[in-house]
Length: 281
Image (cartoon, rainbow, N blue to C red; front, side):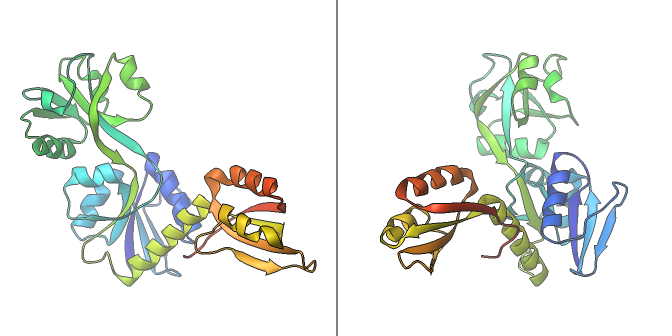
């Protein structure tokens, strides 16, 4: 039976659970449930602290899990990223008082407060910078005001919290993170993990694309297919009126209204957009 770790709380948890549910897996119905068996799919889910997931997977206790790329790299565990999942995007950056630094090369001899000491130490080493890393469990934004650190390294989303403390980000991002599926090196290619990855990829694809159907005159088919090329090739079916065909293709959800406008301008009619519940490519 495949053993998979799932975030039990925080920004990763709700989206991870929703994605697994869309994949057809059984998920917990109560936040107090720590282990959920899914015998129909031969999987057992363990709800753990997001920061601990990479450790459990890396040590071989579990086969895989969902966590953040930042947490995986910070853990220093032997787990590996097998696929990005497209949610919980964040940017990890340095910040300080205005004018305190311009790039990572200015941080030599400074005290840097962070909740991700492993990640910061690796980044400093990559740039040959000798600095003191101060580990804090949270609220690192106040560490400069309180005199604990000179610089902070933290996840930055809108930047509002930093601005409220009078801080500004500087330099290039340390890391661009998102939720990822991780696995042990020896289980990454196992049949069970392969099924899980295909299902997750199917959900990602279904969320990224929609299906467009429309009728168009035969002489306009080539131009219409240039607008909706599909993933491989659109489906073109004859209609009772020999002068028309029906076309079906997958198009990116993000630009679907522009596609509909272009099709209408070309002469297509009966243009319909439908969601894709699941797919396999």
